[in-house]
Length: 334
Image (tube, helix red, strand yellow):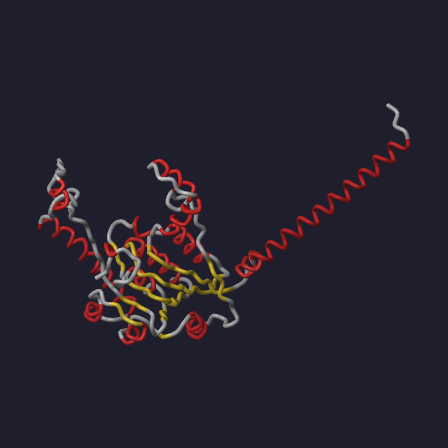
């Protein structure tokens, strides 16, 4: 096949045009990516983490056995660029198991690098348990701390069932199996069993606070009646070390632990998969439709935000709230 000169020239011009537009497209895409990175601050965040810094970890809301948070704390321990950690806590408490797991993770960090806590609104019950894992606790004068204790609550619907004529029959291997039950009045043996479990965890909590705060067990027991204290009261009772904020916590790291005052505080956040049916609006729409409830995606999105994590707590609970709190009174700390 013979190609004339004009065809060869046309093809070369076409190639030049294609090459030109490919380069232009690449430049535009690169510019858009750079602009996006700059607008979101991702680039700055990554660059900050690549240098020596102090890590900030926020622990807020109801405490659960939070695997993403535990993974993050493990990463902080290993990261050589993290020279110190500040826990920013605002929590009424929650699952005792969750508090214990996070407490232990913080202690593992503190074995190799200093950890301080800055209390926001409150660090109560399991929230205070986690704060006590750090080497230094600061709180606002009006912050709430304390509420040292454990609770186990259960419903007794036997009177209601009797009223509506419902009887629940059961066959079990031993009298204390699945006790206490909401279907009948609780026996003294069942109450004694649960009381032993509660007291065991309570004694562990008290000893933990006594050890970490360097006060006698007798002193700790006086504080461990479920009472909450303001920041200023907590300072007088040795539950915290200073009145202040995050800067106060950083100053302690600088003065007492030799960390450079020039280091920046960089936020670290756990990576979470929002794949739970109550966290995923689309899944929530599907579930409610199965029950014959018509709900829009926008309404489902709002509902998923409002379903409290406390509904899915199990086991013993270490939590405090006041009468105006949104936290369910079924997990009230006394």
